[in-house]
Length: 319
Image (cartoon, rainbow, N blue to C red; front, side):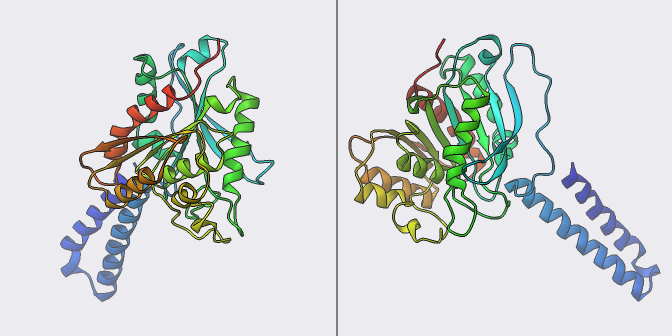
C-alpha cells in the first residue's frame, strides 16, 4: 500500500508540473521540480525495500484461521547465550492444535538483504507447507523463521562476528532452546533441520556442517560455497567456509540438499563445487530448475521439494 501511495504522489507531481509550469515563477517551478524528484526517489526506494524486505513496513497480518488450520505466531526470542533478543515467526501445523504429540523442527533462514517476511509474504511459505502436509508429502512439522541480525543492513551470514552480533549462537543455541521450552517439539538432532534461500542457503549448509550433532539435514536453495563477508577472524576462508570444510575436515554423517537454477552462474558454480568435494558419510542430493536466475520465482518452485526432502530425512512426529 505504501508503494502505491508513493506512485500516486509521483503521478500527481508530474501532472502538476505539466499543467502549472507556465503559470509559476522560478521559485515555484524549482519547488515543484524538487517535489517531483523527491517523489520519484521515494517511490523507487520503497519499491526496492518491498523487494528485499530490508525494512519491513509491518508485521504479517494475523489471519483468522479455521479451528483445525495451521497457525503463524510472532514471538520474541531472548538470547541468553548470544546476548541477542530478536523476533521470530513460528509455523505450527494443523495437527499441532488437535494432537498432543511432539514434532520435528526446521529452521528457515532468509537471504540478505531481507527478513523472514520474505518467506511469509513473497514466497508464500505457509500455503506451501499447508499443501505439502495435507497431501502427505511432508510430515507435520514446526517451522521457525528467525531474524538473523539486529540491524537490517548488517549481514551476519549466520556467523559469530568477531566485533558484532553472535548470530550463529543465537540460531543454534538460543532459538532451539526457546522452541524446546515453548512448543511440543522433538529434541534430538535427528528431528532438526535447516533450510534457506540465497545467503540463507549458505547459512543452512554452513550451520549443518558446523553443528552435525544439532541438525540432521539441510536444504539450500541457490546458496553459496563460501561466505560473502569478513567475519573478523578470517574464518570465512576456513572453518566458516563449507567448501574448505569439505576439502580439509572429516565430513559428517548428515544429509544435504542443494538446489539451483541452471542460469544462476554463481550458485550453480558453488553448488557444483560442493557436490564435487563431498564424500561419504555426507549424503548430497541435487535439484536443478531450468531457468529463473537468482529470484523468488525459482525459490517458490524449490520450496515444496525442498521441504518434502527435508521431512523425509528427519525423524517424524512422536504420538
